[in-house]
Image (cartoon, rainbow, N blue to C red; front, side, top):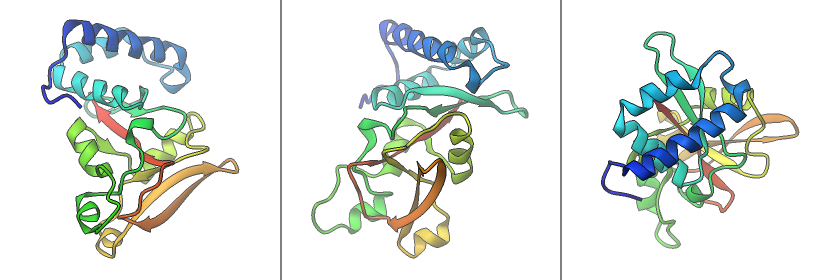
Length: 187
């Protein structure tokens, strides 16, 4: 991933074009919004645009799914049909990664999300996302885990099977080719 948090004009224009196309193709996710308002906020916040580009480059396919009524922020969430390809085979966090003695994954979900300037979805955000479309029907995604569970060595992940959203637990140091994570970003 890029270390500089600036996009070139070409990258910026390409990303805005991608986001606009996705926004217009999935109006059911944001029926009362206009692209011009979203674009205006994006173009005035280069750091958030960089984060969205990181989400896009790792396969997230971010789209607007909500607006915070209190502050007007647009909430972008990864809307790829399956857990993003570029964010799979990761354990939950740095503590879990450091605890593995062998066969360590390349990174952790929390570290990667933080590096992108985004956050893992909460269970509630994940469930809300599943109301908009069907996601993770073949994969699963780590979600933010309560401290009590994490202290005991566990972590939570979700998926959709049998037309139902499930929440499961696993050791935080586990990782699987079909498990990644989804991010949210407020702009």
